[in-house]
Length: 402
Ligand code: GLN
Image (cartoon, rainbow, N blue to C red; front, side, top):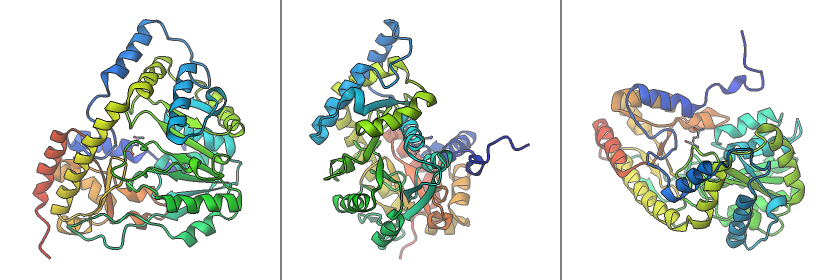
């Protein structure tokens, strides 16, 4: 019997669940699903524990605990210079994933076109389908100088003509920067181009900025801060990546009063409200988190260098990520030596043969061919975990000399 509704049937089980299961079965080092293998900061945990002990156990306000909305508004003003009304323009959600769903369901009508970059984070396409949207894809492409056994600092890129054709007639564009899975951080030029097309074609921008604090010597530009964009942008983000608390599922949407009403129209019936004590913990993180974030960024910056160099020494072609905690690499030369074809087969065999798990990016493309030669590794792990992964991967053998 087909139990899954037609609108969701095409999506199957998420690749993160599938690869984490495979990693567990083979006791592989899990560089697949992006979550830290270390705990978040004590001062944040203590604030949540204190809230539980103090009996903060009933529903939170639907739009967010007042003190969390206020803390987020203060943070937004200090980051962007724009004042927002905490109770009208900010909605706290159960992670950014819920914020994406609430936004899609709240602002998109069936049949509306929603533009997204591929590779896309897998929930975008599924929530677009739940909203009845027509997705339209613009491809992010690896840099032309990507070579086996080398690390390139050149970024992923997209064709402006392709973007322009996709934007005419669209209702919204979903922009993820810093970008999962490529690690690309959209440049100011790229975002200005997107902003120009949004204004020209009257398109809303939905931004997923959950990796906003994880950039490495590259500026994170918020689309909402570009001229004319605060009126048409819904900025989404969350606590999980910045504070190594991916299981807390605290996210938020910041936007105009009108668009806020649309997001809330869906949010109130999706989850109604988000876990009260975790929202109290989030306030501590937002208000007192800067030193933690600075040290986390330094840790990830070293992890990034280490994993990039390791992968290149084994024959992967590595695009140095400018943000996030992921590395995208070309595996063609390595999989040729392993005798496997394509990213899915490569990632199915890697845990069993070499004891390391990774993500096959073709599932994030409308046209899977575009991702076939690529693989994504996560580096949000302890140094010893990454060293163990490197030790295991060395069994692949060194890159052949050119
Ligand atoms: N964002 C995480 C990643 O990209 C996965 C989240 C999830 O498992 N749904 O790896």
